[in-house]
Image (cartoon, rainbow, N blue to C red):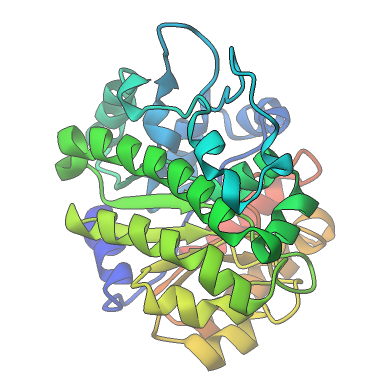
Length: 334
């Protein structure tokens, strides 16, 4: 069975063995990891560890507006009050800000990354990371963002739609050309804290899920699987995530409230593919190789074969010993 077939079988809930992904190590982790495993790049590290897929974040694209600046340079040459000062009655002012346009996103570097993956016959996850929740929170200021969900909901929705439309445009530009060579759209926000969702399930359903549904539906329209990343305790949101026809959920923050494998497997087993679950807060940092292998075995027993073993945070930090990452990979593939 090649990796394309394995990945497809897992996502279709038809697999007879689980997969593995080493994550996306923090840049400060790379030197130590590359030296330990004898590789020169993160892509080579993934091959060494037997990854089931590779991730090409944001299609390796770059925003290249002719006037310069970053994608959300909203106030450049604009004498408009800050979004936090606007109300529902002033949406027109918000619409006059410098909203980004997907046509300026350049995916020239995608080709090389795609070719490397194809050469080694490994599935590709890509697409806009689309962290609209974080972006809108930054635009308003997080506290103002949450308050305005109650005081000025139309303004929040208008701003969110602008941001999401940009990401949808990015995906359209990338997938119109490359969808036949991509296997899944991988997109992410962090909706949870260690204890709960940052906002109530009701607010989550109103201000977040309509846009998760749009991104997932767009991916499906290109024949791609939809995989959502969210750290933290998101157990209360999982029924909505499943109803949006999102195929996979990553990274399963093991020690966050309600995110233990026993609870997730009992409530949602067979309804969504879980990717992650190997605790990075304590186990991968402080555990022995034997303890890590035992925990991976436990996760596999709970989640079954339609599961992808991976660290419970994609950014493997420098405090995680390389030998522990190796132990997780070995146990996943036994």
